[in-house]
Length: 305
Image 1 (cartoon, rainbow, N blue to C red):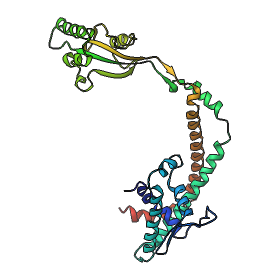
Image 2 (image 1 turned 45 degrees about the vertical axis):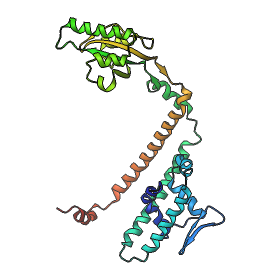
Image 3 (image 1 turned 180 degrees about the horizontal axis):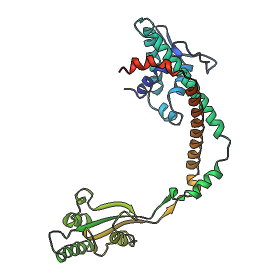
């Protein structure tokens, strides 16, 4: 299925606005250059431009239109729906009252959203957001910080089913092999009784403080050199040895690197607040003005007792 087909199916109501004569769009081009003409159906350069503006998100537009046959598919889609519209106009079985109402409501929605978008722009453009962004950066520093983290492999030998001395002897043998250069994954496969070892080969991935039991955490965060093998550690799970893969120090992203991200969030919050305030006001106006008694027939129709 062409990549724009799903888009146009979801936008059928928008096409009804134009093709049922409910919207008269002014041409964006001085010359209505015809790209396709067949069986009384015409597709112009202006049609394609309107389609692009209506059906491709601005941030993705360039990549969408760079795809092979993108413009060809747009023209085909316009032609398909105009052909179907011509056929529909000959069909008296369609509910034209519902179609016209849906198209008019879609027109109303598009105009309302255009107003809100314009208000968003007026409320956010031309404002110096950097001081507010810097305040957020200083007040919420943890959001932009990466804690100290380590990545490590480990071997676990449990005490259950054997004496403590036997368990310690096994983990010491595992450590000896690791120190002698044995592939640590093979040591894990040979000795580790961690239930996850078969899946992850002993790799714990990156983790921060507070995610491991204290004796394990204390040792692993004291290790600094990659490939370092720890002493034997005892925890409530048994005996461990650790191989350090990487130790990352705590860091904080610079303000310049996050400034646009914070400003984007501030603008979004401003837009959301404006819309929320507008909708609360309008909902309140609607609530105090509606005649709820006249809803009863509809309630009975759609929610019969």
